[in-house]
Amino acid sequence: MRAAVLTVSTSRAASGGHDASGERLEQFAREIGGEIVAREIVPDDRPLIEERLRHFSDVDACALVLTTGGTGVAPNDLTPEATRAVIEREVPGIAEAMREASRPHTRHWLLSRGIAGIRGATLIVNFPGNPRSIEQTASAIADCLPHALELIAGLPSEH
Image (tube, rainbow, N blue to C red; front, side, top):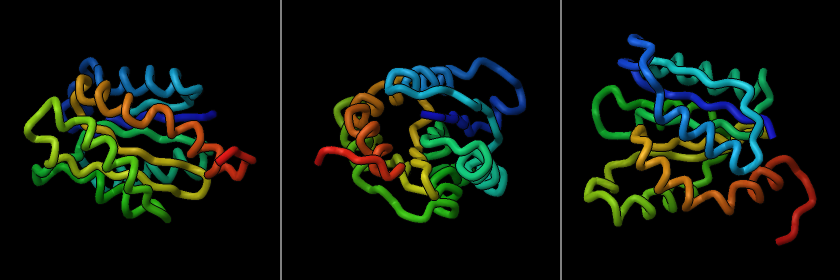
């Protein structure tokens, strides 16, 4: 399964510093059978985020696109809005499960605005920007993602 990881961080895009969150998402994608075809860092710029999501879906033909960062409530946290602009159907249960998985670990779990949705044959999932939070939320959805990707691809699957 082709996969891409997009880190949304103005500071990391400017400095080129270590991207622990993107690294963790890449590891997660590999754990569930993903082949990483792209990993990028972009600033908190909604049109640019939308463009990269479209590119990974439509040009790179990724089955899975994982984003990290930009899911909070700060004025420049625009990843959910960019994702919503490019998806055709939302998959709210994924985002709900991720928020619920964060609940025991932080009192700020309910401020996460990440979403998940489908564009064509691509599932896009917004993760928080903190590597520790990625670990907690990824484990909550790891079992369902392969099945979801089979269904999105139109493959026969047991229900």
